[in-house]
Amino acid sequence: MTGWEANRGRTAVIACAAVGLAAALLLILLPQAASAKRGDVQAETLNLYIGADLTGAVAAPNIPALEAAAGKIYEDMLASDPKSRLKIQAKLIKQKKPDLIGVQEVETLYRGTLDDPAPADEVVFDFERILKKQLKKRGVPYRTAVRVENVDVEAPTDLGFDTRIVDHDILLVRKGAGVKVQGTDGANFETKLDVPLAGGELGTLAVPRGYVEADAKVRGTKVHVVNTHLEAFLSAPRDAQADELLVPGGPLDSNRPVILLGDLNSAPNGTSQGDSAYAYQTIVASGFQDRGVTDNTCCFNADLIGGELTFRIDHVLVKPGAKLLRSTRTGAEGSPLTPGGQYASDHTGVFSKLRFP
Image: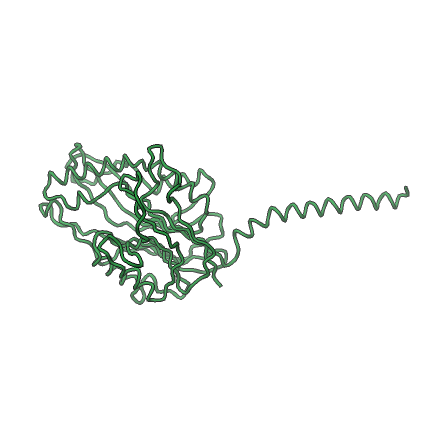
């Protein structure tokens, strides 16, 4: 073999190796590019569920009944096993890896000295902290882009201490996914639900609901995202809150494509919560298109053991319309359960992959 032939052979081997390396790199990089295509935005609405039925406290006719109801709510929240439920939610989020998550019923549960006028401040569960810790542990960290505080209510219990619940809505943004938040806001609706406490013996509690909003750029695609949780118990305040979303200059008024995420407590054909389709229909009539699932999303039993999903009240709505690549429920029947056999929430999440022009 001549020196030229030997060099030619070595060159051919090197060239083949280079081609093989390039092909291997291409196989590694292609799935990443496909999951992060320009114009694609992955969004999810997720109600974490407080873990208890609040009806007893709302309907309590006197102070002893309120104390008993507050004690039961506290015990039910503990029995719902928030830590295990939020571990499941973190696993489900990791499977889909949404860029943006609108989260409702993000509770902080406190306890404190009985009848102490100072707010109870001993944290029992912080849903937001637990969820983000579990997400980070699984290698899919999220940050809170914006948060709104809704109801903050404290009551004495028949357990010998005060209990306090603070409700929030938040917008989570996935770290390292090419998502940048450029402006945020959050507020409570002017319309509130008035609840007589202990049959009016302790006055009336005005229960606020709220929304959060943000301008975001997702891998170069500019969107305006809103997350909300409309009133559950009565249709009149819920309908008024939907109207507030749509006022000129309100949270849904943007020169960017708008993604509305939320538990609207309103299905296309009405719900059991006051049997009103007004909120959903009014928002859709304003130009929003439904880009969520067609299956029901609510509600499993209050103790999260069994139950039937009979209403579709958790929505991903978009204006102007984006192409829906796929939409699925998370946490539905057949999903992982806690060690006690409970679902992760009484709602399913709704994940949608959208493509904007």
